[in-house]
Image (cartoon, rainbow, N blue to C red):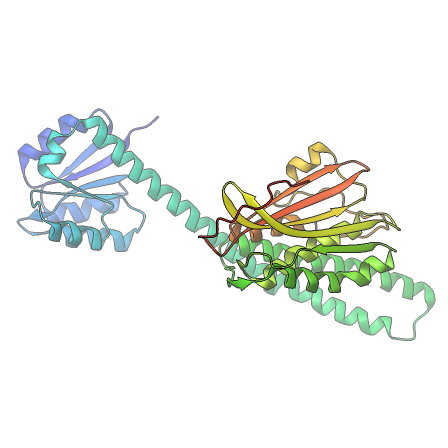
Length: 375
């Protein structure tokens, strides 16, 4: 592995020599003896800059600020003989990643200094990587929103006019298939946009004290007509006086809609879906358990392991040929993570599926003993 490059900027010759002896085996070191040289050399892209706080021709704090403005992800450690809280604060206000008093720098085991520097460099590398990833995702969101979704919306509008027009039956069938296909693709794009927004941190829940039964009842009313069309019964067993949770009722409803939609999709005609809520203690914390169970076709162990992964595509068609984006459960997982809750799945082929959601109680001091049995 190549050594990290280090710029050692200090006007004292003895300091440069001692630090060079201490760190030379771990870093490729270049020296700067004054502020002007330090500023010029800093543009070469060193992995880390060890910077004195005072020079005859300048101030290390100002140099640090200049370096960080040019490259926020550069790693700068300021060293100083000034053992004051004020010097410390000035260094970090300028963006320094670390601060070492001179006596500390020269007396500490070099291995500890190397470990600290390597940790700071790695932290900044990961931070830069995360920001670049978010930037790319933001650009992708823009493309999907304006350059991909908009044409599909226009296409659906045109085909809707054709569907209402007086056209030959053979052509009408083709238009209907095109309309369904375009609608499916637009649904996938919308789900992908939503998932990318969650993963980019662009979606933050608006958390308020919430009765989770309200969101569940709202979702049941929304999905009941779809279930009725397949002669599927939805049975709700919602416990009263549940602990209040801190939740975004819109996002919780989205989770329930996704789970109920999947349950209807993968349950055969005449089947049943059961929804249950109750108090539940998990790892010592009170909360609310939500169970969504069906007696549908279930999934294999192999599929279950990947079911919440982004972009995992399992069965695409339901028992009546229904289609979906394949991203709904990934979105559910993101929403549950934002609520500091959990989502789990138990399922066997031809025996149905059971999804279990857990939300922590809003009352952090609530220690009432409640059921710990999930069956």
